[in-house]
Length: 468
Figure 1 (cartoon, helix red, strand yellow):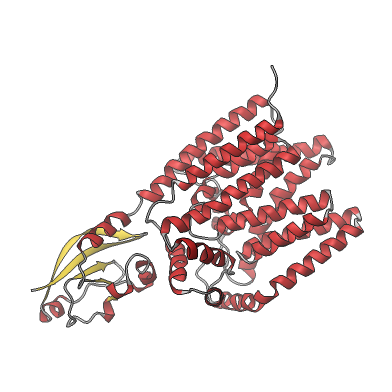
Figure 2 (figure 1 turned 90 degrees about the horizontal axis):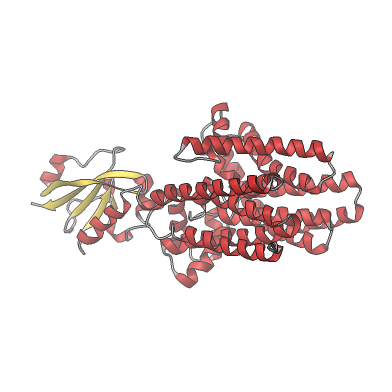
């Protein structure tokens, strides 16, 4: 029987990549967002120029490139939840295609296929692939930087250094822990050149570092300001040994405990397999070093985050390792691809099952896990022109503003009960009390309970106030 050519395998993998992307796209058409996504929408609604975006993000804790990309996108298509979510899927498709072509060319179609399935099926990947945040873009930039760095090491071509520098700068301008990953990538490449005494390549590396630093220089002042702000106050709780142990579970988070355990066992098996490969090949196989390099980057990002959190204050949460997650998948793919054909087939079937289970969970999260749809239906169908929406939990005002016009929203303490309103739809959370009943009566208002509702993870009781 004639074997299938490598080219045909690669084309098949590309078709699979587009299919997986289509499945991701199916998770975008909903109204569910969480706090960080609401920040993104709020920024888009309020900041219209690149200068305004840069100034606003400078007061936050992230660099601005993702918001720049997003501003260009919504300028053409408008600010729609599903459209903004869709923009996060785009780099996933680019990552899949890049991984298939790059990994397949250097390590074979089997490794490329495993890389694709591992990246797509990992629970945390599917979760963040459709969020209105910068993580998928970070994944693309960090992976591209790592791939280019490997080519720069193995070939030393100028184009590899250019690609490494461009991807590295883009990563640094997108998320600071993507920047950390890039620094480690640059550092490993430097050590490899020093160890192997590659003076000419080391000069190219130095030029890449200098040019990258020059391009990043305009943001340094904002970066230092953000570091100062974080060192004074930040929302992340203390990192304890228990928190650190939870990092390992987070990578494989699932509604099914058996799936979590199986993934953890496979990961440990992959590490043991890599050690075995180094012993068997006596450190002479380039693929073994590629796997080791891919494993160390995400681990060192976590170590860096934990150390900085101990030295400054807690600044690291495990989702900040997301930019490096594809490299973890590449490590596992490089190890598992050495298994027999039957073993790879079994693993492939298991990954497909994992992908299906992850999709089921994520579909519930995106479409069914909150009261958002029923709340929006209630208010959009019943709130009339002269009605207003009042809320009693100020930290969520920018989330409510993502769903309702500013002229309809009023915070409870700013509510003027003598105002010329039709009805007042009151969103009452447990964090603050309801308006004083006697004050309502004195101002001619009656109040009645409507039902239990919520937006995002903020659940509340809805009451309607009418004039007696």
